[in-house]
Length: 307
Length: 307
Image 1 (cartoon, rainbow over the protein chains, first blue to last red):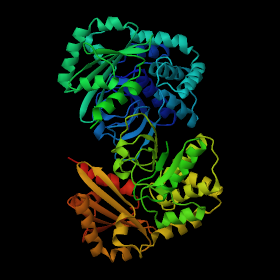
Image 2: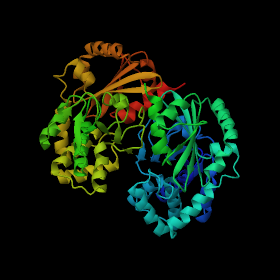
Image 3: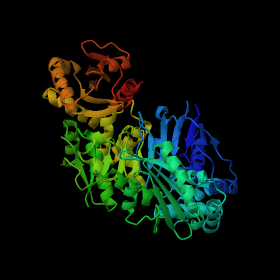
Image 4: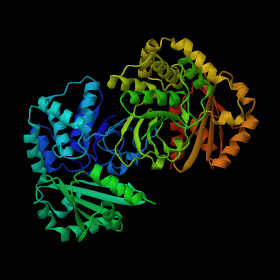
């Protein structure tokens, strides 16, 4: 039986890279593993894939009969449709754990580091499997992407050390290659409104609420904000269609390492209060905030699960 | 802030031992970790503790302000009261994952092996911490207990290899010491009915149902069954008090490696069908069944979560 190795919906560079990389490792260990993806490959990821000579994994919509290995996520609502009925063999992830359940024991390796690829590097070593240069390049791309070139507060010493090791194996300069890769993903000028909202969007259950948090990276926040009126209309459509209680849109400036957030929906006021800043016209600057996982999700979770 | 390292309620030898052992490892790594227990120490565990010169960990009822490391379990209903509001730093476990959630990323190491101690042995090695003889003895005790001296289907090659290593460090014979330890825990003749039902009982959510599965090890199944009438009365009291849909009582013969099960409650018929044997007077012999985790929980989960 084929085993699908998959990252999350709206895949980012870590989700695509880690699926390819872990499928490769499992193949070396004799497993019939195949990397898949649950959505479109983004510009940043396409840059990484083409630099290191990989094709995008196959797009798969439903789990069907396949057994699953999840990388870079564990929450079912972020995963492949039909996961409730699938057998999950493994999880390798670096996020909080929630809305996840199996009937049987499994291999689950979750570590509080900045990137799934940092954990995968350990698994290569633990299994004594050599890392080819192009596989190292993908892993390095994932770490650069998740850590915004080591500037995000999610970035740990372990991620930096892993990146150093991978840089040598891949034969590229993390700083030079990394900035090119981030810039390739930060050009939002040709994106449609719907693309901006779905490029890197994740759904969360917090208490009784259904929340979507979308994030875009850019070198020109004002350019994105110039379309705020249309953006808000598109966000309200999303809220209505998915029955969301909050849509939180984070526009991250990758050069200055700040974000502007737009909060809409019935729980927007709670979200605004949670960050302790004034939202004007539904938006506010969140100084130093670049990480959804570390600086947005915990704040909103606490605000929305309070009694 | 103190960090509590705890196994599950109704602690077995793995839960008590792994709490002590992992707290020791974390202390060596500089953490202010303290092993605790969530229930009475059983005879088998007391034998292991006294053999290797340990006191039972402190009994703690509520999580309170402490941060938590969970060993040998992850499901909240099996854990310390108040866990919903506590910060969970780590989980080291070998069970299915369910009813578990954190607000933040954590370290979670779940592997499909027979015993938590087998994973802890890896963590000692990964952290380059030496294992003292008495700590090795506790880990060996945990593996012997969970694997019924390597006879349970949950026992993996990794558990056997770990036990071999620990045997040498601890300086005892696994076979000889192990049988003595199992026998120390298998004398049920002096137990009250309520003790039989709670010695090793775990609660599970399966679909919409609330299930309790209790297990006892014995060298004399008939002796336990001679009290079936009173046992059933006590089980019905449990069902009423806890509002259970099924109480599944497993009496395991550690010499012949079979079990007799008693099923009571509104979902008993489904449970009986699931095993494909005839239950007479609410009981049936389950040939070759010794593992709640591998041979009981998955069967009942499937039967009770079917549409």
